[in-house]
Image 1 (spheres, rainbow, N blue to C red):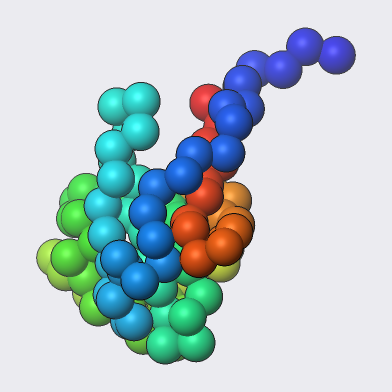
Image 2: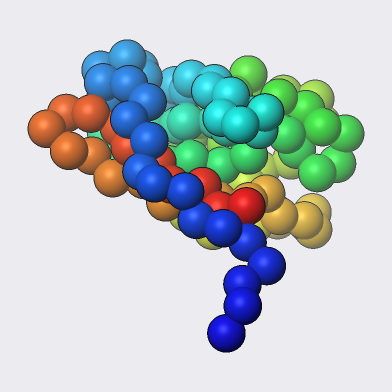
Length: 110
């Protein structure tokens, strides 16, 4: 069965300590801007770094619980699903993350 998207290999982006607790880092992979977010529980998530509302840079937002709040208009996104929460509607693309020996690897489709 043909696929419309291609999966690229796992990409080693950084050490987990390079992302502060409740903080974020930005990476550009194949021209695509990705946001890496580390929760207080030290879980790491990767999502596209643009809010679907006004393209606010989510890596400049506030990380809380397992969510990030857009710095422009306070839309809140669940880092696991990419779905907007509360009264807002929309979604950002999520990307698979693995931590191996303290390094953060992500996988991007497309």
